[in-house]
Image (cartoon, rainbow, N blue to C red; front, side, top):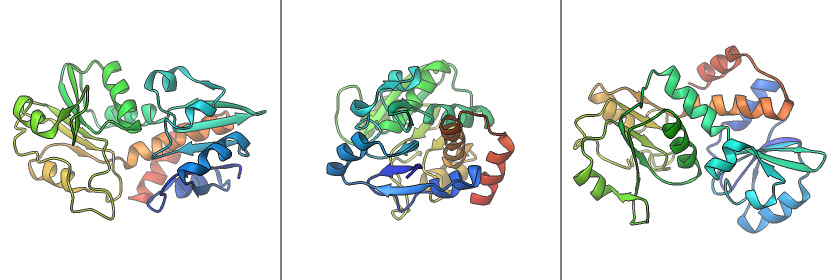
Length: 250
């Protein structure tokens, strides 16, 4: 393939729709088992790929270089192949930063809970640091160094002002699940959920029910795809293209 997405399970992905709308170029979805990844990356028979769960870190050893943002984050979601030279990028950073700006979510000086610590979380944490968030706390369902459990977060940080879900809890088809109850958090100013299918997760429904600004991950998905496509083709795309695709997906 020339362009496409690799991951373990891609049945929920909108990437093909988005990229083919951006470029009118064929874009393939390729599900890879973990044992198939090494051969695929060593063969690198592609011009550009996007990378999703669980390979955002696993692809790094096969790359020739990382751009500064991807190196800092430690996760890659875009790989460009030029004359056999593989360069890794992280366009999730751009997508999340633009989502915050477009929705006027100001994290400066705020206490932020980030739910999950996978590849997407790493990009979110980098954006929060650059946007000068006050206290950034990672929350995970089980004890782990550098992370709080959900119980610890509720007991010690119920004054959090922003909650960002980067975990897959609540994603289709398990739409009735939610990673956290917002009830103990009475100071919330915004809730972001990187999930985009369904468009309104249980977490976002709870936020909206309390009139807390609630943002899903669909705009971020389209924005990061725009950035990835610009890297694939070494050019710039108009924001109007993002706006149309976003409206169509909604």
